[in-house]
Length: 113
Length: 111
Image (tube, rainbow over the protein chains, first blue to last red):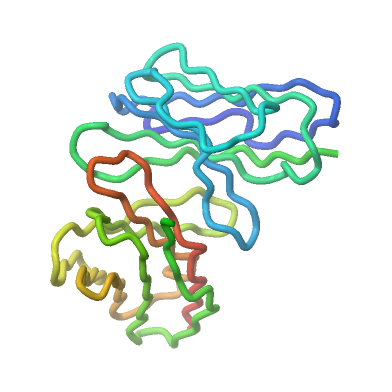
């Protein structure tokens, strides 16, 4: 495996379900991110982890709960979501030092019904 | 307030023409600038980065940065149908580790 891998690629869940999104990076990076991409809107930064410590929570509702057990893995736990949470959820990684941009995973297309 | 503005398009150019994509940003301390390409149904892919005023060329792509005008652009020469995608401008603040994105410009190259 190379790059940034996300699972699952697609997820349909009911509003009472609990599910988790998984992200793994194989690039030796030390920062990981969750972004939300909705139609007609800019990519929205949700969470930032530097050296597996959360450094930013961008006013995200508590129904989204991140977890970063180490610098290579990132999870987004979902519970009691709303239909407006349906979107493409993208994981990215980068080096904290230097400034070389982010590498994105292929994303999870989430539909809340 | 940190904002990155792009013309959402769609921008249509004939094959072989130059496509010009523009981006403005509001925060004067912005330091690093990136262009991502996103094909429909795919994730963003980094294609260019630029950090200092002037032009930076990479193959058919040229990024232009003017910090005084808070403006960054991407030129695609000899446009190909495979260049048809949404192009996202992203800006990073000095000392920060957060990229701020524009809404993207959808480019269509007509064969």
